[in-house]
Image (cartoon, rainbow, N blue to C red):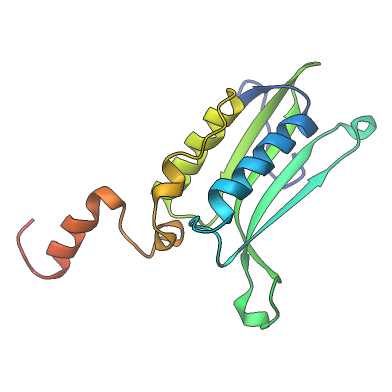
Length: 159
């Protein structure tokens, strides 16, 4: 089991060159910039956390994005897990990234996974996920390509 309770099976997941801690540094920087900073979709209502094990204890890293716990009334409290990544060593110079989408709208989570895949391959730009409206992350809005169609259907007009 990974540090976030996800099974990590050999041959599954996204492969990235480098040790988990090195991959974490890149993913964390890009995820925060692309998904969690203004005007990014997850800037409000979500918290970014990470946990790293020393190499002597396996060297795994977990990245967890929590929903903010509005019920607690205290800014910054962790709510439910919205999205997580488990980074585990795969050989001496490679890392396997396993992703678990807990509460992010499927369409937006797919865009997030595509970002992670590109970043693991060496790209560094914010891409599709950043272009989505904030409500799309929680499923409160239709995908941009479908937004007009959804509004017509909601207004009782033909598809």
